[in-house]
Length: 373
Image 1 (spheres, rainbow, N blue to C red):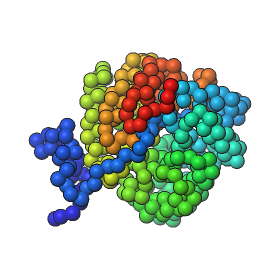
Image 2: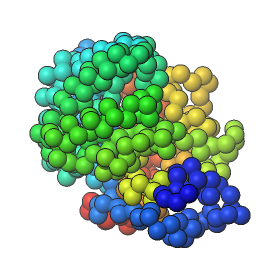
Image 3: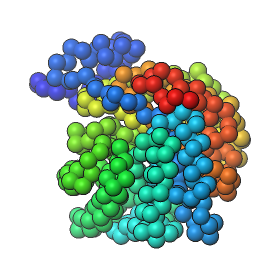
Image 4: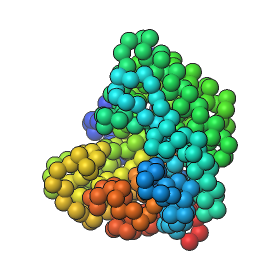
């Protein structure tokens, strides 16, 4: 049987050193004539996610506020060249078909604040990604959304279409360079691909920048519509720690294994890869399950060196890959002085050893030179 080899076959080849040398995957793939080499965008993405604070009880501290302007300036001073803005909509539960555009403040006000944050970012010399999220109010993961049968799914897609197009129009208005069509919708991407492809075409009608989708780390190989997008986007929360007590060397080895798999994926689809989210909690052994929210974890031990080692493992591995377009660190907050948004063992590297790793790697010569200090 001739034709393009499947991703699973290529991944299987990389998994067995006797068949393909694990450290030379491109050499192994060079003989596959119909698989093109990846072309990476000229500019690497050194990005940081700036999370909103939409709680109106706290006053003007979220997007567009004076504290937000300080946060944006801090991000630029770290050597970042991009910022990711993450407006939220909400669903009541996993089987709901309704998506509300308001989160904790009215959507019209939220749009105004995003416009103001975009101006702050431009003044700081930053490019902008808009990555809208849907939050399930029961706290369940959006990757398990299931409204029911065909009729209910059609209704859900119509609701999501309005949500995604709304922010695509806003992204075009502010000149955002990158837009994500969705985040971690694992329960639908491989089963409702026609609906996703139609949505992508509608978004292209209103938005002229680059498009990606923020796939969960264990979803990315199953997404069928990468050919419709400009970059393969991944929320990169792979477990790069294998067991309690594993340190930098193990994390580096496991990150290298991920890189070998992504080499196949990027080459097969002829698309560069961007980590639309990359983060590790400030806690011992947090790379064993980096996707877990700190408030859902018991007995976390504050550990700045561990978080920094995990950052170093990812950055040393990925910045050396010819298909790697860059990453957005998860996450900083739009009020840098509000310590109520996340406990100390949370994801934010601000003021921690991991931030020093970012400063180091953001200023190194990978991709194109970063912003001048």
